[in-house]
Image (cartoon, rainbow, N blue to C red; front, side, top):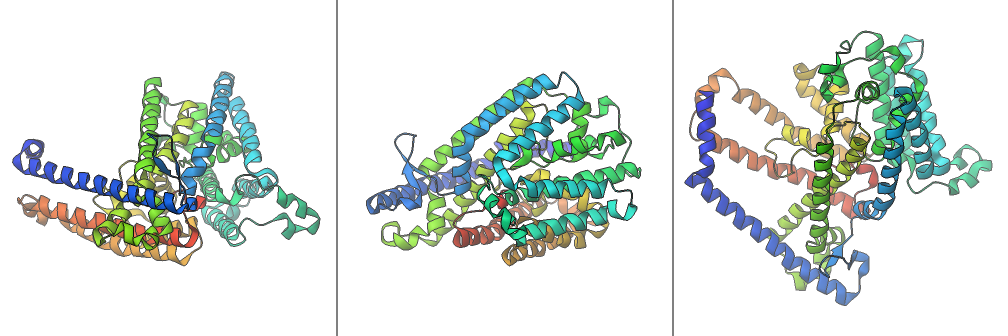
Length: 502
């Protein structure tokens, strides 16, 4: 029966019904691109005559077109790309040589290079994250059981993260007036910007160590079973693997330090001991896909200026020239979200490719396009996928898993909001997402009941599912845009600490 349904589903791709869909989708896509190009051209001409280059519409390199560089996150990444590529080349070449010596030498090398790496990024402020990192290791390695338990680890790291947010990283002057001169050496990247990712690594190490020492994790499987990241995450390691040097190498691993993706300690350390099978062909193909994505983003920033339009609310300044309709405002929202998705895809894939070149496999973040999600659950599994896997392992399952799912979703999304930043608008975004998530979970559970089998066989069932998927995509865009535009209006752009986005 299932095979027959799959066969009929495959045959629909060449049916008259689907041909109508193809025409409708092509017409809508053409309308979006053409209207977007037309509006962007008007903005470019108006801004050029007005000489308001603070809108970041600058001469580009592609076909003599103006380029939209109004997003500070993409602009900084783009400007720093040559330096990041140089660091990637040096780190990878030296690492390949060290790997022939052995796992211990590799751990020492990653720690040493990582220490120099964050020293350049944070300069004198390196003292703050290192202090918190060592304090977390002391808790995890403590002989007092109550101090090394996951509850204490969670409380300590959440308190440190909240304190870091509240004092904005702190200054040396707050410690002693004699140290005030060190505040002039903050480095190109403030240490608290990346500390939310560091806190996740702290928790991962400490909890994995606790589960391993208390035999709460599965025994390490043989090499043939270690070729998946999921198996490596669950497999405990020998007690000797949870040492200080490997821990520091994991927390400050250069390819993943700034933006991720997020990798658990068990998965990271196991690849030092037993490398995963990684074909050179896959890495080459992945680099080619990254290059295509970067070229697409560059083309988009040269032709569609909706990021600048939304950021500076140019419809207010050039309303007479633009004459935006309600449909145009919706289109602006769509293109802003598409830009965000493509920007984060490029940034995350660059750092993941760096790790792959070093022989470390980490989860992919962007699994699906933002407009190719039909439920909230699928959206979160595919948007920041490595973070979702981390939340499932260290929050969702320990809190009871599916048996307490309706309660877990509120706790997890509240943590996600606070993890991004301390703002009520993020709390509101998290709770609004939960409001829409709960009915979806109940409807999906009801639809999979045995009594609903006759309904699933009806011809109109897939149309109902498609309608629900369309509504869900609109809701997802509306909920996310509510937070995105708050960022633009309040800060001018998404802050670097929100690199994981909403």
